[in-house]
Length: 102
Image 1 (cartoon, rainbow, N blue to C red):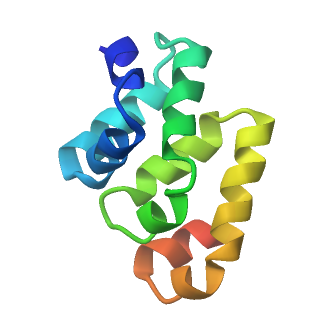
Image 2 (image 1 turned 180 degrees about the horizontal axis):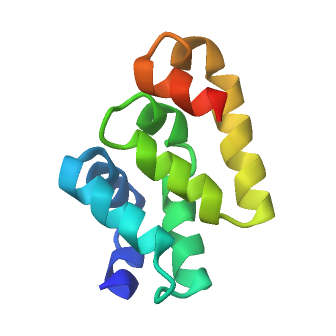
Image 3 (image 1 turned 120 degrees about the horizontal axis):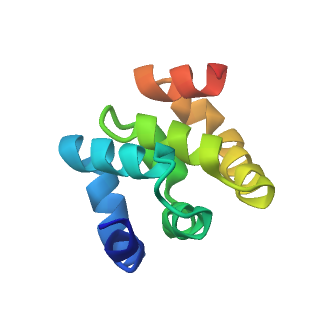
């Protein structure tokens, strides 16, 4: 399943992340010890450029947190930079402000 999800388009992965059940599924894939690191990196890469929008959403903020946790150093830097650039708008949301605190 994880391999198939990694081959979805970036738009579809972002929609899955924003969905209550889909977000939980992605979190599970990212935190699983049975999913290869390369597959996790592909999933995180599909969400690049969308982390700020996902961070403000109640169903996908946890996916952003898991993405940061399991991303490689360059991906973590990109996620942090994206969230930092949107910090003023994220601070206005319940979920975005929680992410910025971590």
